[in-house]
Structure formats: C-alpha cells, structure tokens
Image (cartoon, rainbow over all chains, first blue to last red; front, side, top):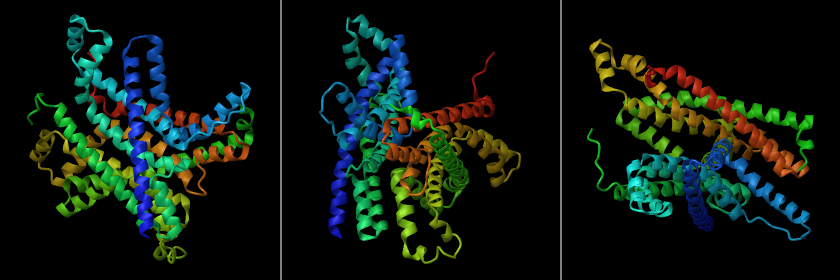
Length: 228
Length: 237
C-alpha cells in the first residue's frame, strides 16, 4: 500500500515540474503577446489578438490532444516530404509543457496587457526623456511597476494552470493524477488514492496563495491602501 | 491532410451527436449548478457559523482540486463503492450511478456550483449598504430584503464573471470524454482519430466546433449584459 503513496508523491514532483515549466513558457509568451498587442503595429496586434481569441475559445484538452497526436504526425509528414526518414517521437513532457504554456500564454497576455495599461504613461515618457531605449524602459520602468498590477491575475492564472496539469495524465505523462488513477485501479480502492492526490493539489494551491500574498506585499510597498 | 473523411456524412453526424451531448451536459450542469450556487451563496452570507464553514470547505475543495480528479472521484470512486453498488439496482438516487452521463453531470454540476457560489457570495457582500438600509426602512424583513433587493442585483452583477464561468464550463465538458461510453465532441474526435488515424483533422474540427459555441455563448452573454446591466453602463449623453 505505502509504495502507491510513494509513487503518487513522485508523480507530484512531475506535476510541480510541468507546472513551473509551463508557467515559465506562458510568462514569456504573455510578455511577448502583451507587447505585441500594445505595439500599435497592425500585423502584430492582429496576430496577438488572433492568438488570444482562438486559444481562449478552445478546450485545453482538445488543444493538448491536437498537439500531442497531431503535431507529431504533421512534423513527421514534413520530414517525409523533405525526403528524410528521421522519425520524431514527441515527448509527452515537452508536448504537455508546450501546450499548457501556449494556452496560458494567451491568458497571461491579457493579464499583462491590463497591467501595462495601468501604469501612468508619464513614467514611460520620463524614461524616454532620459534617453532610455525601449528595452531598457521596459526592464527598468515598466516591468517593476507592472508586477503589482499583474499579480492578482497572475495568481489566478497560476492556480488554474496547476489544476490544468492534471490533463497531462491523459497524454500518458506519469504525473500525480496518472499515478493516483493507476494506484486506484491496481488496488480497487479508488477513493483513498484519488483523495490523496486531491489533498496534494490543495496543498499546492494553498502554498502558492501564501507565497503570492507575500510577493504582493513586497511589491505593494510604498503604495497607498484604500481606507474602507 | 485529408479533410474528405471528416466531411463525410457519417462523421458529420457523429460530430452533431457529440455536440448535442456536449450541449446537454453543459446546460444541465449549468442549471443544477445555478440552483446549488444560489443556495450555497445564501448559506455563505447568511447561514449560521457551522453551515458557513461546511459550505466554505466544499467550495475550497471544488476550487482547489482539478476537475479531472473530481470526475474520477465520482465515476471511479463513488460509483465503485460496494455500498453504492449493492444499491444501484433498485434503491433510488443510487440507480443513477450506473449511468456515465449522470456521473459526469454530477461532477460538473458540483464544480460549477462551487465556483458560481463564491462569485455570487462576493456580489452579495458588495451590495450597496444604502439599498439594504432603504429596504429596512420600508419595513421589509430579512428574507424579503434578500429576495427582492439583494439577490436580483447581485445576480445581475455576477453576469460578467459568470459568462467566463460558462465558457470555462463548456471547455470542461471536454473532460467527459475521459468517462467511457460518453461521446461528446472530444470523444467523437478521438474516435475518428483512432478509426482513420487522422488526429490533426479530427481534433481541429472539434476545436472549430468549440470555437463556434464559445463565440455564440459570448455573444449571448453580451446581449444579456446589455439588457440587465444597462443601469450600470456609463451615461451616453
């Protein structure tokens, strides 16, 4: 019995790895998407808008299956057409992280766009007046200030993302949910093992809420609080 | 790419039936979830301490764990308990646990109920105290105020977040494909994938269907918001 709990705990490590890796991918994509949307250049704005509307309109599971089963075959067909007999075996970890990162990148784009818009325009103008370039302005002025505005939305996206990682069990990645299901099938005691996994997810979400609250306090230093 | 197979009548019919399953799952879970949500939101804001704690831990569990685990818990967990299996042949509520549709529906309804309850409870707490004061001055009782003043406005103010929840729920119904013998749009796509080895086309068609439904739902809620939140819109002249 105890070895099943141990395997679920090992799956939990994979869950954490998938979540953090996809959070990283989605943050990068979100920053790129938000800058594209705010760049004012027609094709970039159009592309970013297409990205956020389409991705947010399709279920995560369908996208994941599309990438995992579809992309592998598509890429292999491409190789074949080019005359190479190399066969790509898409790793489920990479497929899972790529899909989740791609999906939540769209949500992050909206969060970051809102956050950047909340920063007073004078801040950026002052930076330009000091002769900072666009990249330096972004890194020194925009980024540190947008953290505070982006955090609530970022927290929500992260909580949804952790729970969405359960879907990678369906593309046979051995995460917590997969292990719990295997254990319950093997022992015919589904309730205990599924509840154990559920409790672990609750632990993750509670820890993240706590950590993000601290980060929020750190970045809100020196700002006035509304007196109710 | 071979789209001809996906566009054959047989496959189109399969997608159509899948869409019907998806929509009936969506609408029934939203219906049950809405009733549950109003009850839970009232309990969260007005109930005695112990009820508040109980409902609070229900929503904490629902919102803190993946829906996939919840579906598994009901389909593989509850429905496989001997206590329920010994009753599901003849004793009523338990007879339903035999049907995969019911198991999925129960999981989805509890899930959306939990999320919506917290939204609605938030809107109830944010009601303008002046409105309640005025109602009290008119001599209304506690429940009268709830039913006539607070709930109608709180439900309206929940509309924008609720439209997000409905779209999320539509996407969540794709998890029904993990329950055997339930063929929603995603399950139909998986079926076509395994029958013809056309993953790209099959899942892309499913994605297009979901996209259409999503846009329809968003448009519908935009109309509802225009009608019911008109009093909160900025003045035009």
